[in-house]
Image (cartoon, rainbow, N blue to C red; front, side, top):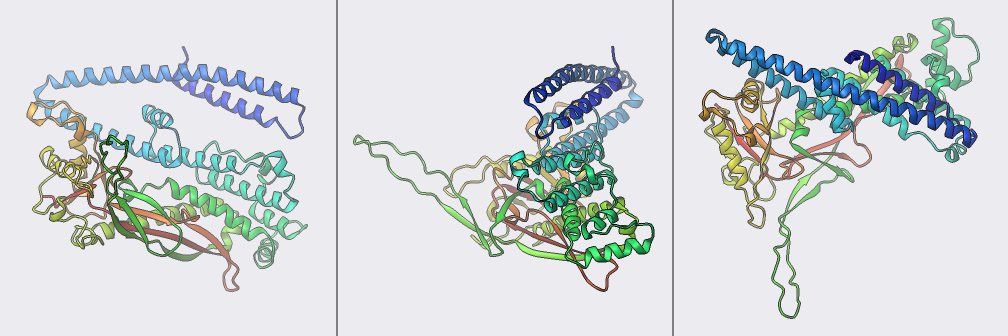
Length: 518
């Protein structure tokens, strides 16, 4: 029987074979030839499915063997009183770490549009969070490339300049992804002619330069002409950086996105976020068959998106040396930095009013307020009892029309000082005493931590899709940071402008709970 490594290698080879066969299909090919290739691809994919099934069975078998071994080892050590406490603590830490890893992997895959079964496979195979981030980046680049493929009919309308711009842009995107460490990133077929070109060579083609680029002076002259004339190169390079930046930004997972709902604003004016109370209650139909009308209750809170921006530069040395790895690091740090900046703004608002949040428009009270029934000001430590109190408070909330909401907490938000306690509480572990048991309904709450929270305060939030307390959003059509280049006389290299339209605000209080902690 093949080993797990051999099965994985077989899957990679079959996938590569299928991709090679698919690449043989070109425009204008005879239908019979296309069908022949498609038959070969189907045969390869059938073989791959069989190998995949064998691979999955092997993973399950090894996982079961590992679990059995761990259980036996745990049982043996548990029989030694001197090691019992240490074993219990180690198991708790391991389970907490595994749960955190699984939650992060699921969140990364969900944001990158990766199927749940693929995320579960990463979890089962023990993939690290860093490896999953790389896979997610590669996946998003592939999806982006796939979405830009034109049909044979549409491609007729593309002139030579458009074709060159698209090819150069996608070649740079693929090379940036590879330079950033992403694996299995293929250069699209329409961009392969530019796949081996350096940045300077692409700039030279855009300005019609036909000579050899042998010296730094020649390279500098080409870049000066490319950036200070009407050539396509600045737009090509900026588009490439934007695509890569957006991919890196979307993979980031700041904590605020776990408890806030997303909105899109049509402009920069304040938007009234209408929270409908309830669907009207059903009314009896009278003998005449008349159906009575009902009304909705409404509560309006304001949400607004603001423009932000900053400029930086890509040095002349980076461009001349064709340092795509360094440029990708700049883009990666920019994407992460924007996400961190968003997170800081969100938590500044959440923690305003000594942690009680901003003031709501509807009743002029802070989000977490005693009158809202969602605040324990005296503070208690995280435990089954205190979390149970918070959960009960959320369940007792009423909608705008007075109906019991029965909201359930989905997230437990803490600072660094109490995150481990929260993870230990949510860890599945058979207690020595029944009184120490953690109910399954509480273990399903996902603990997350953020360094913006200082001290021991903690929060409970419902699923934002059900009962959001906060909203974040972008300007319609600008769902992420974007770059544009500027041609300026006093900068060696490329001066780049980063712009971002973002907003964060409070829209309700019913789906949240705050405890001052202890």
